Amino acid sequence: MAKLETARSGLDAGSREISLTIPVAPDMEIVATAQAVAIGEYIEMPRDKIDEVKLAIVEACINAFEHAQTRDDRVHLTFRVGRESDGPEYLEVEVFDQGRGFDQRSVEMPSLEKAFGGGKKRGWGLQIIRSLMDSVAITSGDWGTRILMRKYK
Image (cartoon, rainbow, N blue to C red; front, side, top):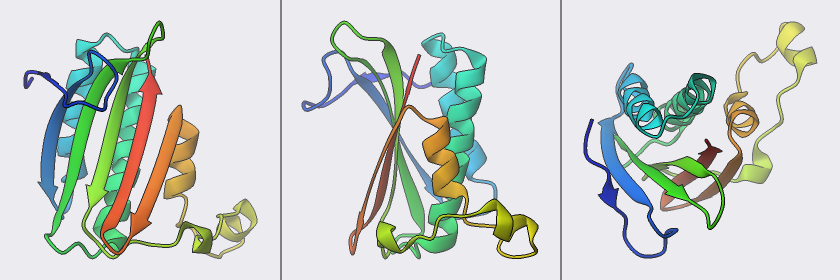
């Protein structure tokens, strides 16, 4: 596993990070999940929580691959390990694309009725990410989209 570097200022004291850039190409999200597994094991995160982080990363990467239309044909990930003051250790994953962005208010919430009634079976990615992670922050604009996800150990 790559060595976790001490992060730049602006993060919690003792935070460490690893950066990874993957091309927009089939199955490249698996490369990102392998990094999450290595870091999760390094901090001794329970396996079920590592699996939740992996699935959230897959959803975030696939959304970027399919919708972002990135200017550089890449998705940039930053993995951070840290601890809030007197709090539990966490694994944070930032997924960033330099795409066209989107208006979160315009994203229709998926429904089981539509999915099972023969309608749209897609569109669950953001909902899945939010349900798997302890905190999720999404920012988006003309510069691209940034999804910041955190899972506590």
